[in-house]
Length: 231
Picture: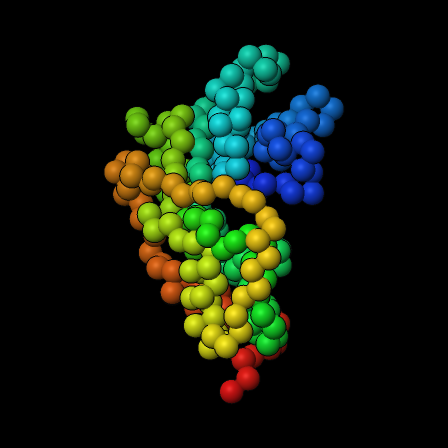
C-alpha cells in the first residue's frame, strides 16, 4: 500500500527555520519532522511512500536520495516518488490569509478583498481534486521505469497573476463592485511549473479549468459560511 505524505507547506509561523529549509525538514530530536512521520507509518508496516512536496522540494529530494546514509539503522521499501503541485485551492482550506479562501470570504461578506503583494506575482493554480488525482496516479505508477525515484510537477500550464485570480473570483461571486485593496507589502516568488513530464510519463492533465474549480470552491464556502451575495 502506498502512503502519501503531504510535505509542501511553507511554514510561515516557523519563518526563522523555513527561510532555509521546508517545514518537513525542521529537526525534532535530531531528526526531520518528515522522518518522524515516516517512522510512525513504518511501525504499522507501511513503507512505500509518495512525498507530495512544494516549497524547497530540493532539500527533501537530497535527504531522500541519501536516506540510507542518514539512517543506517532503518531502511525503507523503495521507490519513493515526489510530487510537486502548484498553488492548490478548493474546499476545506480555512487558512484565510491565502488568496482564494480569503478573497471568497471577503466578497461573501461584502468586504473588499485584500492583496498583500502588488498582485503581479505569477503562479500555477491547481484545483484540489486534480492535485489529489495527480498524487494517486503517481503512487500507482511509482514502480515503473521512468517514474521510480523521480520528481514530478503537477500544474495547469496556465500561470496567472494574483490580480487575475481575484478578478475571476469577483466575477463569479458577482461582486465586481468590490475592488481589491492592494497593500503591496508582501514579497514572493514567481512560481509556476513545467508539467510536461507528468503528461508524458503518467498521462496526467488537470480535469478542471480555473472557472470550474473556482465555482465549485465558492459553492463550498457559501455552504460553510452561510452567507450569500446580496441581490
